[in-house]
Length: 120
Image (spheres, rainbow, N blue to C red):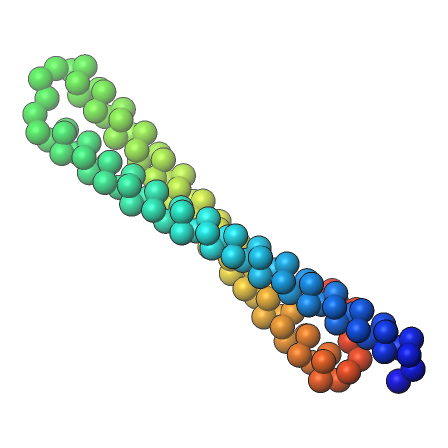
């Protein structure tokens, strides 16, 4: 292999390694969001249960009933929104994991062959 080819091969490997690290960073960031989002639905479920208890504990006026129903509705809406966001983050994390696996495999193959192709 000539000096220019070897330099090109090293540059291509460096780019692949950089892409791999970038995907790993994206995955780590997404996992942080997932962990944070996972806590919020639990809190919202507790809040929803609290309002349900309040609802069944005894209501003195129509206004109290409306207020409790409204608060419970807000908690359910927030919970639904958080669960949707959690699903989106999980899908993104799966995508990042797949891309990382793909890049790691491609990097291993190219290192073994000693002649890296240009990454996707």
